[in-house]
Image (cartoon, rainbow, N blue to C red):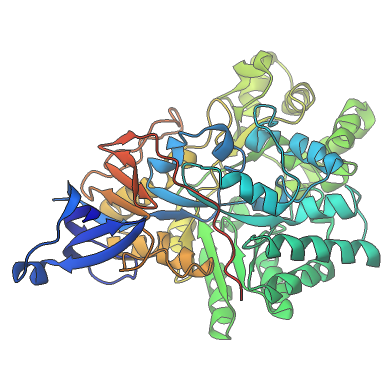
Length: 536
């Protein structure tokens, strides 16, 4: 007898088709049969050792977070309710060009410092891997949700070139090609870049194109955080479209937004650009989060020249008054490339987390508010935070536009991604609320998407991008990564004031056929594993 029958569920299967009522039988981690209501009326209904009454609940594939920053959280926090409670059963990590494999000892120390604000320094995790394959093997020991990995181009460049702003030599480019190929052979699904983060931003298009050719040869995809989401955003999107066209490489645009005042109301221009490329045969997808503010580190706003030499180079420059003044001018007057070419508006920069306990009173205030409370100018406050927190400060950037968010999420190539940073006292609520916010606010309340459309955006469409042949649909033979939610009550509990509140209306989540969330409570199941690239 099979393990579990989910009885009387309203199945939204991920394909975009209308829902239907059915009994769904799970055994051995897979969906073994689906008996629709009409068929069940004329035959004996399926039985199993356990029955789950799904009356009034929607059964859908588990949600796929196409842009996650859980690289260390998956190992640090076995509970991982931040994602599981949302119905997420697979996350794509290794984002924005900076992560922890492949590395050598030097590069690992540099990367740990550079992205402390994203993942913590990692001194509470045994970083006992160096290659992509070893990291994936570590995930295979058991994690809360499944995880796929993107090779981080900035980390690869740090290994081969260092943190210098110069073109790669021929030998260095050859080494980067080999590192990318090895990572793909070991199971990575593609390559990410952070082209407003050092050292990845020092790569020119010719270098990136060569790496994308390697990715294409292995059937992966390129996922860039491109060179600007502010001034020059459209040009930056067009650059990525053209680059991947030349390389023959699929493109997935990370956290696709149009931010800052210069881009208010301009999402239709971006979508027209993408539609022209899609109609010409390009393979393009994108992800977005259903909020207007962004989130990053305070150090990310700095101009690229200040990042040469890595984190210690930044701190050395900030310690020198004359160089620090040059940084201030680039930030406040010119508009640094780290801040997307837009002069920083300190009243939009909210401090969301610090690593040094002595700085905790800054959290929850904008840089300008914190500066006013101390009777100093904002740059003085920002500089102090950067130095005393050793670049570990995280921020929210209140620079987005609701009409752009809604237009982008309607697009035919759209998928969902939280871009969720789980560190800090007041993280962005998207880390805990992205997927129920799509279902509760943008489907039920605002009607921006139908339920069937939205589920497809969060399940089958990302599974297709990841080339996963047995995930993303409620279909016989597919893996039983499933979520049951109440369409009338599902909602994000996380707010900007209380960002760590778990969502409502998602009582059951199955990972590999095992209940990881049961009656709204986390079980001790750790059924997640690394999801490796499907060989071409």
